[in-house]
Length: 282
Image (cartoon, rainbow, N blue to C red; front, side, top):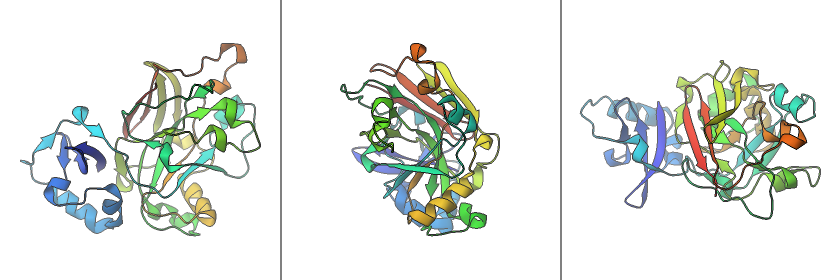
């Protein structure tokens, strides 16, 4: 099942992407925000599934929608250096422990919405990532059952300002600008996606592919990430975890050949089985 949030008549609504188009679930009496959908658990998913059985259900054109933020998270947790190829291209080695950092909530931005690049920095970079959407409170959960706490998965772009990322020993200053966590536009529910399979992760800038990897190449699996994160952060419904990026970032290129992102560029992140996230830069 693929779910999304969108704006209609100035109000946020929840929809389900079907073969025919987007069913407006809010118009059918279901919640108008994804957090309430998530909180409804399996019973809510059954209600949605039942509603979608109606073959005459009116649908909207997915390509014409204005998307809203996929959830309203309390936490946006990120993982660094989670693909060996990416760790090596940036001059490091594969970490022995998970590298966590965070973004502030105003970093989250919907698919299709422009992101402003502050003019006082210049080394802007992309990072195509699989994003985990937490489905229920997770606090010190074991790895074996960690995926039971996942509602679904979406596409994300961990936009980064490299010239401020490395000012100190931690990365927050280069990761948390407003809008620097685009995600969406759809959430694929956990029962329809295997994060350990060879799901392609791709990034393109202005139509030119710059990243290509598979989620099975992660150093730390989604189960390991959720379990470990839950030891340090009390995760809740709608929280997001960006799980790391494959090789191909601008930072990994030779210094003389780096062409940083700039206003006017469009960054596209695609993940097999989920969809495509488009982010214009201004």
